[in-house]
Length: 279
Length: 304
Image 1: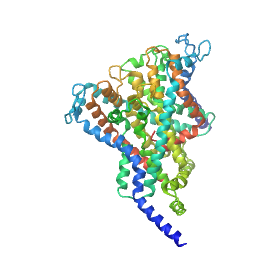
Image 2 (image 1 turned 180 degrees about the horizontal axis):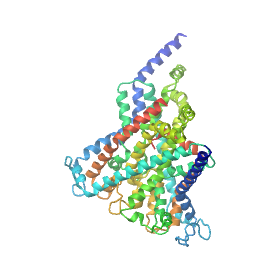
Image 3 (image 1 turned 30 degrees about the horizontal axis):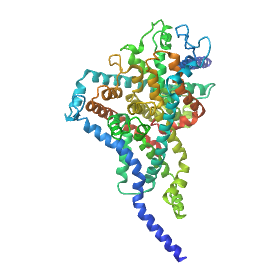
Image 4 (image 1 turned 60 degrees about the horizontal axis):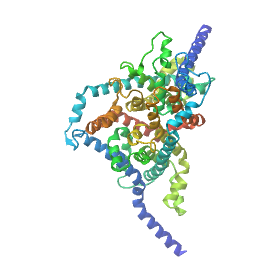
């Protein structure tokens, strides 16, 4: 028995060691990128000079900001992400309310049609959506990046489920008090649905913040390009080549604030991921 | 008193009349955007895939299944399918299994737990493009850390992204690194939801930790596994950012996958007909997984 216990504790220790090594391996790409982003640009990287140079410097960051308009890209991303979210919150609240509390002709068909959005990956529709954007003369605008996402089947569905759990009596009481449907929606339905709305918001934000293919297709200048596309353009500039300190600085400019926010709101982030499961 | 009653009746009648149209009005914005950017384009993708339309043929010409025939005849497209298949069938099982193991290990209290979870989860938060930039650096021939790492085993430096044998493997490593933590979180949540009593009973019956894991935990997590696998497959099929950034489909087409090939067909080859056919193939390939995902999501949100 004693022997077995010693054996078990040895296994346990080995397991923890293995875990530590794997975790370190997972962390290393980011740690290296961080280190190299403050590496002096005039000291070339080599097998013997892999991490920090002779001194720490922010020169690469300054240079990256000079070469690419990261501030503008940030602004574009923020406008896109929150523009989409603002419209979505309105459209999904209205639609969720309609499906949760009204009976009307064609209800099931309409619900099914909206849910089809969950079955068709939006990335498979870039060809027709690209021509729609061209026809609307919206190519290379922020609106072009946002437009296809203003309606959300997932959000509609989530709010329908949430609104259904709210007692109908509250709804009736509010109408008895003379509230119209908008007041009822706003005062009776929205407050208890806040956790669902926040979960939806976080998953929408993280999806659109990271989205790449669609903005790549419909943007073509710094006035509308989001961070992701901006970073891709930056790393592929001929003048940058393999100047890794510069490239990693650019990358850190893009991911730094994101990581910081994640560290602060870790719990909420993870919960929203769990809640949505749909990116 | 009388007047107030009349007023009230009038109000209700007006309310009922409005009520008939109200739900449709509430749905209008969502229906509009879903129709314009999902339903109509879905129909159009199918329809347009039946026409030739490219640089040579500017005005669409009906060809039936011609685009599909051309695609399946082309070596390049068959390679794209093979690449996609390999990428999906390697990255999905490895990351799901690894996520399960990590969750099992991290589902207890010990010192530094938060740090471990952070180490595995942070890649999920990064945009794929920036993760790809970092890994572009990791794979640098000579002093890239991947090469430094294999050098400790006596393997000489490889040009990972420049070799048609290694480039897809390099992308798969990035894929596994990026998403395992995401799946781990679902498993951790699943583990939290398992009933304690069963494990206490198993413990009383003298089951070892390994046995309890093998015969209780893993089967009980079946639902989570199904859900996570579905998301993993969908994401793997849609991989494109890293291909665009790291290899541009090369060398010699060895990393081109469906979505990248779609993009290429549209913007490099300017072949609309074929691009639409590829879209249809992508939609059909994913349909069964998206439906599973939806059914599962519905179950979760309904009975939670």
